[in-house]
Length: 83
Length: 375
Image (cartoon, rainbow over all chains, first blue to last red; front, side):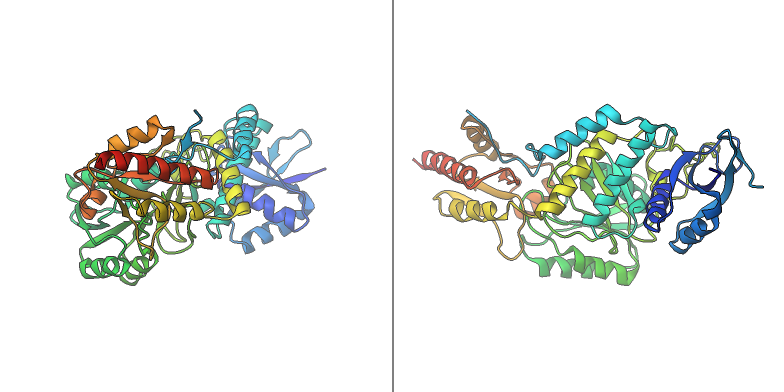
């Protein structure tokens, strides 16, 4: 399953986002982002299905949770720019 | 002889069993919150978040990220006071403040922060409001007020004082050490609220909370790792990370969350009937002076016994298996204001674990001590 990763500014915001998304019926979890990503070093991200990322970000923005950017997970669990 | 513990205004000793279980579970399962992506780190992060959510529920807050986890109320007060007190400006405090407020402000005096205490009569809320209103001038940068006196149980009208502050754009800090768990606290209102976890919220020692109002901004008291934004040399701008450097007390937060949920489930202020019983019956003892006002009292009950120092009374009660606290209760300012600074007072406070038999045992023992003192 291809996943997208929405970068959050802290683990607390990521947790709030997971609660919000799960309430809206989306599957979501938290994972750490690689240290070499600019702007998000050692940050936390919300993992959602790739086809749900736009919906997830919209929900998060509407709820006032600041999102930074999003990435994609490759088949090996690596973090890449979304194609 | 089993101890009757009535020093709950200092720390509640008998915690609900779910608190103990939560602490133990966290000790056994939690890694460093936010410090990794593995299950143990995530479990710790969940524990902290659960504590923030429980607090946000009890304190009517819309954003759990504005619940800051601290070591105790003193820690929370130091963060808030040292952020908001400005050199060359004046800080107004009530005449009932604890050393957790007085000492940080004293340490800022050398930096040019002037502190003005506003003594008013015990159990007179109108006088307190009036005094703050009169003292509020353009040089005031901060107001700090205790919600419930830790010595006398006097409920200060912090909501009305907050209105005065808000109208003038002056920040306000409330020390809710005695009120949290006994009186409603709204963390979305104007003030910064500082409170301990280990009193009437039934959490473990070493836990406390700082509730930041919407839009509130404070400076970190400590800097260090936050588990995120690691390349940045400064503390993050966002809450709660900005004010929480270093590894968290996850077992403490787990216990505090369980304690808060206990209060939510069982209701605030369970001990009040026992307090009323003790006040009524102690008041009837010859040679005992009660410090009580029916208009505005909550929590700790202070009394003195004629001819006996308050520490001696506490010691005699301890000999009879009853734990209360004598002396100045780390609040010499409150005793000066009330005129009890020479002898201090003996203080009893009830918790959910006490019974009417405990209150009756206190009354019986105090009567015996007072009768001997007068004989």
